[in-house]
Image (cartoon, rainbow, N blue to C red; front, side):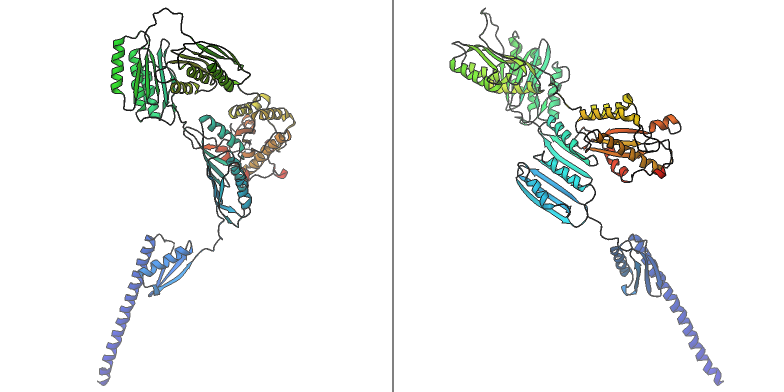
Length: 640
């Protein structure tokens, strides 16, 4: 009885303890699972799926390889926000550091009328003082601002060549921005004209090392046109422009549209430039051209805001009055109109007095006709000698009284106009000035027309018949790059293919003729950037073919050097079997694929409407990097 009373409380206490332990175990498990689940979700949402979560009681252990120390710390911070930070155990690792990467060396050179500034990061192996000294020694360098920083790392391949080229290019450019790194040079500058732009682009291209990626952004400045001139004529031979100026492409399109409606045919252009007197220039020009078309024949000349409309002799007065009245009311503000209806000469006189100057192709100038007085004759003769040379002018003018008061001005204006021609004549009469001849400058007609409009005044009449001829090519002029490339391409077709000894880079004895021919072409080409490409068929291992093609291209480069060809702008590149031009399944195809090609390296341009042939230059450095001299023990294909 007594034993039973003691056993019951003991058993009850033991049962309660067991239940408590079971409940505690379930509670701990639930906490572990909740913490682990919540933390895994948070890490996944934070882009840290690489982290492993292991829970052990209230402890949460993070494991895994973090990309870097910052990411590892971010994972710890994220875990501390989900569970108590004191419960988080860090067992994550970070890959060992590979060391600090070398910086990217680059420099930017700016030059304008106030001086030169250079900014960037350069290696300490580049003499900063020498670089700044080179800039200071440039012509009209002005003040040089040195904003460079240096770093104690080896200079990358190509850095020295690129920097030397940048300095050489800067000497040609009074205003420019040049960005330099080891692989690429970008030049941004402006030229005075389209012709100057083409010349500058050719110079910069020829100067550049062949392995350098060159990007040119050259814009041609719009000319300042003064006076802003338009002259349109309709005669028995049709309609034409003597001069046409516009301030934009839209303005040019509007003017040409009106001119074509008035009968203009063929390819015609207007010079786009600065100096327009009014935003309504194109509208005033189109209205004036349309009015002239309504009259049938005549001329209209616009010099800045002054418009002179001259009808053809015999135009009906009522039509003339109607057209002129409508034009006066339609013209925009600022523009003023002077309309002339010529009166037929019915007095039967022998003709007006005149002054004539002729310019021969050899440069000889003869002055004939009438002049006001001895002082005016001396002035005209002295002016002609100043323009054409004192030994080239022959004066045979006659002093005559009763000439118009503005006769000396018209004579000097005629001589000035004649000086723009290569050959021709100018005739001055009281009512007209007539210039005929030929020029080697395409814009002479527009330039002379604007000059005469400014000098003679809005009410004066003048006629221009100036043709354009290509200037004669100078003797010993180098071949153009395109013609040079075409001749190099055809050299092997005409003189024989360049061959090699089987399985080697030794040029075959029979190839001397074609190499002499190629050397002769290159002597006529002048300085160009050229890639000598080596190609093989697919026989043998790819790596061996790559090595062999590189060695063969280098052999051709050496052969040209031996023939005293300047090869500083040439590069030899082997392409192996990667660029076949025929099938490798036949002997004929394999023979065609084993070849040497010559390709021009042209700069990449960013100007509108231009293209680039930079593909060869982009691949040349990578192709050359893995190439070494061919190993005689590795020649598996004796037919290469």
